[in-house]
Image (cartoon, rainbow, N blue to C red):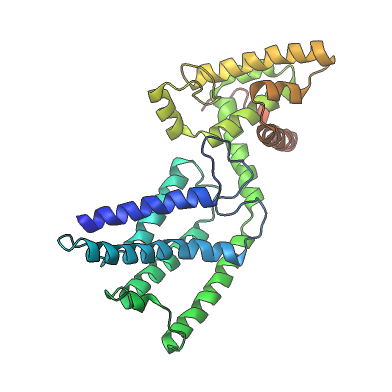
Length: 313
């Protein structure tokens, strides 16, 4: 029981370090274009990034091992076992995948990439635990003269190259476009109030862009928590609303009002003016505009708005 608690503490510390290392501010918008295991939406991933994701849990496993030896030497009456510290990798990757599911990113990630990285990390952690977690802290030092060590190192380098190819062959832009298309089709079928903006197609595209972004940043699970806590902004369009339908209705009315104000001030509909009245962040503005252009192109290619006008979910 004590070892399980110790492993849990180490995993929590690992996630705290990961959050700080990746400079993630969970209160801010993370950005729709960013891939889950990379800092950009590009097709490339660095060798160092792959090594990082494979080694992060084994590294914390070693820290946990050293800490357990220290605790055992200080508190003689309380023995912290280290036999199952390798399960830190297993728990870490199970939680990572649960986060992907909860955040609704399942259709955007490369599952083969995650599987190979997770298995490599778990096996590495198990191997380190088997050969080095002996109770003698000096045993964790690598022995480059060991033939087996050199063999496994060569396998590891080959694996990294394979994983890199798998990641870079994945067409993230296509996945992202399909994801957006599915989302806007769902919104058009479910929230018919959006069609009240049909007279101004730019506002209709803008409403869909905002919904895609807000839904992406605050998926259903998060919105349920927000409703329980009665946060200031909640539901799909992140406003003070009763439910998702009410939230979309408020957004549509807000866009119509802001469009009138925009025309009064600029003698035309200024999208930047409207978006920044909703959220002043430049990052938010760039994300919404990127989605706006993607949605307008999708509608031009597939006539999505008209096709879903009379469809019910």
